[in-house]
Length: 162
Image (tube, rainbow, N blue to C red; front, side, top):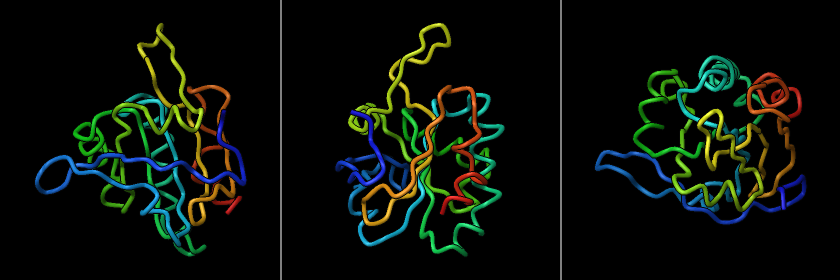
């Protein structure tokens, strides 16, 4: 089942690299009582993800804050070390965007946003999407039909919907 507007996100433990190495992030606790934009990408360091998707949220971070969004999270089916390095390389870390690893793809699969594209070397990855979540409930969901496109899931498009 693919997640939809009005649904509550399932509990999930994602990963980030902290001062002492990988540490768990309880997604439900992170969302409780907050307005959060979550966007997901097929892969760290991949073309459109690096040149369009992440930069669109770096550009719009302050405008989201002005609209009452508490935090922006990026999720990818990658390991937390790659997500940390990519966060620094793209400027996401400096912009205050948290990059989280769904290392096993469990969250991505649970919300029905997983896909596989062997010709591109993408196995068990996340579809490209963005959503506004309020207190764990999906209020806006923009999912791309193709992983190589970043239009409705980009920062500017989400900003208009918030």
